[in-house]
Length: 181
Image 1 (cartoon, rainbow, N blue to C red):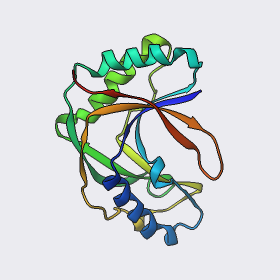
Image 2 (cartoon, rainbow, N blue to C red):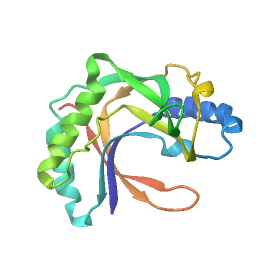
Image 3 (cartoon, one colour):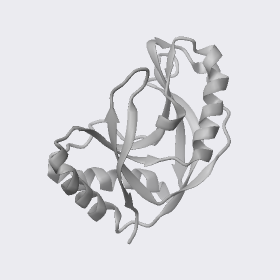
């Protein structure tokens, strides 16, 4: 199973991002757009995992996130990786009070590391991928992306299964793990 851990978004946030995609689409005809239903905040990508390991992953996630408190996040800002002038990925950011999103990503990574899932070498950034560009492009004129600061509760993390398909992968929730006890 190809697995990852993420924060799923409510319909209000996905609707706002869908509107942003539709406004950007004519200006970026070579982009591969993420379907709205697939937009999520990745906390940890696990890769190919034997189905028999799901329970130990869920146990580790429960231990990692149960001491935390639920919190609120909001759509905020936008950008491109690696840079605006040579963009390969266009994204919308997320913010939370007191850096709770980076803290959540950190405890998830820390909880999964003993199971053999190494931490990402790059610094984690709270971002929601909207598009991937086949060739690097200058998107400076399209940023910042005008969006509403949709606020939502972060009350759980989700273990997702990714099934590669055309035109886009399908993501299925394997289990949801509540934040806090």
